[in-house]
Image: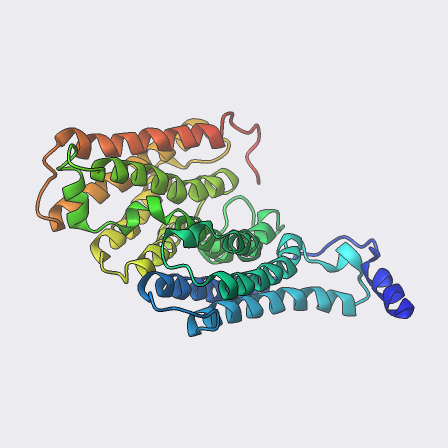
Length: 356
C-alpha cells in the first residue's frame, strides 16, 4: 500500500512542462463522443417522458446514456495517459482545456451511482420531478463540464485565431450546443420549443381563460435566453463563420424534439431557419468584442427575427393568427429587448483591441 501511495504521489506531482493543446482531430473525436453522450441522454429523456411503465434503473435508455459517458470519458483519460507515457506528470499531463472535463469524469460516475441507488429505493421519476432530482442535477452539471471540453480547448488554442473557419470551430460549436440542450431539458417546464403550432395560437387567443398565455410568454423568454446566450458568448470571442448559428440551432432543437417525439416539426424547423437568419445578420453587422454597437444590434435583432418567425410559422400552420394582437405582435418585441439586454450584459464595454 505504501508503495502504491508513493507511486500515485509521484504521478500527481507536476513535472513543470507547459500544457499542450490537442489537435483538431482529437477535439473533433471528443465532440463526436460527446454527441453520443448527448443523444443517449435524449433517448433517456424520451423514455422518461413517454414510457410511464419504467420500473428499474437498468434499461436500454440508461445503457445508451451511460455508454456514451464511458466512451467520452475513456477518450479524455486516454489523452492524459498519452502525455503521461511521454514523461509528463500532474497538470502538465492534462491537455489545455481538458482539466475540468477530467475532474468531472469521476464526479459523474459518483452521481451515476447515487442515481442508481435513488431509483432503486424511491422508484423512477416520470414527470416534472425528473428535473429536480438531486442525482439528476449532479449528473447534468458534470455532464456539462465533460461535453464542453472542446469549447475550452479551442478558446485560446493558437491555431484558431479571431476568424476561425466553420470546420475548425465545429467541435466547440457542437459541445456548446449540446450543453444548451441540457439546459433546455432541465427547463422543460418553460420550453417554448416544445409547443405545437395550434397550441401557440390557442395560448395567445385565450389570455383570460387559464394560464395558457402566461405560460407561453414565460416559455418564450426562457427559451430565448437558452438559445441566444451561447451564440453571444461565441460572438464576443470570435468573428463567427457563416453557418455557425445554423449548426448550433439545428443541434439545440434535438432535445425538445426528442421530448415531443418530433410531433411539432414545423415549429422545430423554424429555429433552424432562424439560425440561418442570424448567420445572415452576422454577415451584415459583423458583431465582435471590438464592435459593441454591432454586437448589441445583432443580439436584439437575432432574438426579434427568431421569435417573429416562431409566431409566423405557428400562425401559418396552426389555423391563423391568434386573436389577441397585443400578444402576437408584442412577444417578438419583448424577445428582441431581452436579446438586447443580454448583449449589454455580455459586452458592457467594447474591448480595446480585436484579437488577431
